[in-house]
Image 1: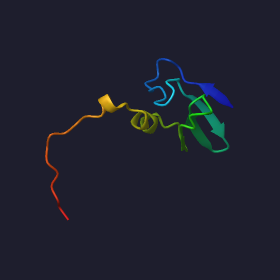
Image 2: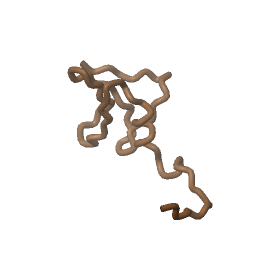
Image 3: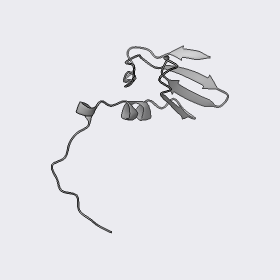
Image 4: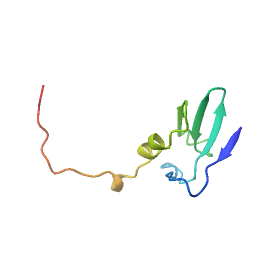
Length: 74
């Protein structure tokens, strides 16, 4: 069963091809996947996981850069 993601849901487009993802149900798992089969971009979870999809599909200019130096703590 394939369900289209509604436009009012906060969900990023695919980083590889730019298309809006859809949701597929496979037995007890929900898969948020790109409709373009060549991308193979997907997130599989027990619930529809938009947070992980959005995190994986951030563009380079959306990732904040830090000016702090990293400290070795170990």
